[in-house]
Image (cartoon, rainbow, N blue to C red; front, top):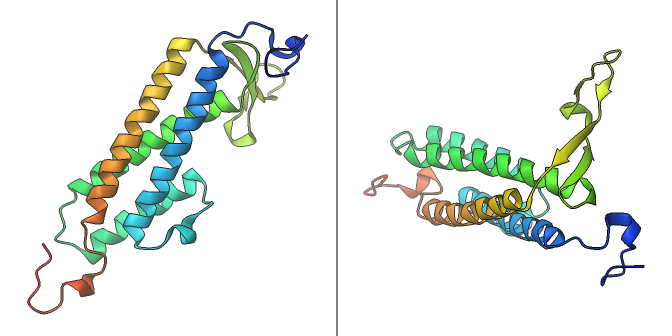
Length: 183
């Protein structure tokens, strides 16, 4: 037997309820978070989307932080509040995308109960023989997935606000020129 989408029922069980729809929404909203992150990079760098397309979320976050740090040198009179706000936002994005990865890259033999194979940098020593614990068991319920979806939606809104604020910043100290102040 298969489910309505052709997946054999011995793979995940037949009645998955809302679980696949919730996982799918985590994926979809997280993709919008990554797109907004790319727009933030473009706003802070003044470069085109082509210059940054395909960067990982982590690379985009790191680049945003680097660009914000360089602004402190280029524009020493600029208040630090914007940069501090965006760094906090980027930290929140990184945490949420880590949670997304835990959902997306896990195997779910039944709704809400699964496991994930961990990359080497996330493994911890196991109890026997000091061997690495390369599998992490995960238990997640629909309420947690709905909370993650709402968190990701909130990050989309916060990133949109940051993009708008970044768009109003001076791009180069040479823009100031004679007779122009630094705002």
